[in-house]
Image (tube, rainbow, N blue to C red; front, side):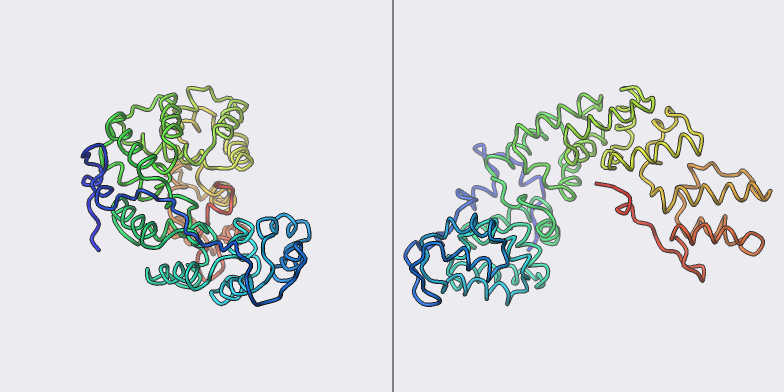
Length: 404
């Protein structure tokens, strides 16, 4: 199904988006009447109102204290017929014990649902979208609220709406597997006001909005007041709203709480950065805000005390903070130092340029030409885990070093 361009979704008519006029989405968080308060028939029957505690321990693997907590909404049950059916169905769909405990702890009343009418259709809906069994498990674990929603009145309209916003069903499913709750944000209370604010008040062109929404739809899924506070934080950094980097900064700030942001300001101040230098670094490359405090400290310390850079230089080149310290920065620095020690360094490249090279290009230029005369170069890379022999490289992942 071809998705409508973002401009058609952003157009206003009677204060609502055209897509909402057709779908109305008047109850986006509609809860299906899944819970049967009447006593179930069949299964294991017990007159003990607390028998569900033992059931949750034995059937789900909850601890006694957890079972006591999660059994409270199930006190009306006198039979395990429905809980048995729900658990058996979930296991048949690939959910293991830990996954089932996660789902049930989120909403114990799922154990009261009718599998055939309330649960199975949601799994079939996800299968019809082309998701694999493991993908469906991921989606349910991230968004178990799917089990509470009506397929036709809520799930289908939401899918169509996000497909129009993001431009493809593949992107919707990608975020649905990885991102909690974005899919279920209120269109009329959050999505439309946020899009209107970014477009009309912030002056963000729809093309630029589209780029960021495709990677982080959570940006418009938050409360309007939260988005306005996020924009205010970006304004404080001195980034003009008309700049192409403005949306990138919003994207980065969305991932970093104000408390974590202030902690990083204090850390960099301890290294000698002024507030203006910190703001300048964020404007140049806001992605470094996602580095954990500990890793940021280690990286800055290495660049200052080992490489010899000044704090001002680092502030002017914040991109160097994004490279893996153990997999890229340290081994490449040691290789260049070894070449200098052996009198083989030409000094043609600055270290900042060397960090940019791909692993293959770095090997080609600085390691392979000297591997016979300076075998220590390969030892450096082998210890770092970026070389495994036969001139084959193991590409480093920034996730190994505290990007969060």
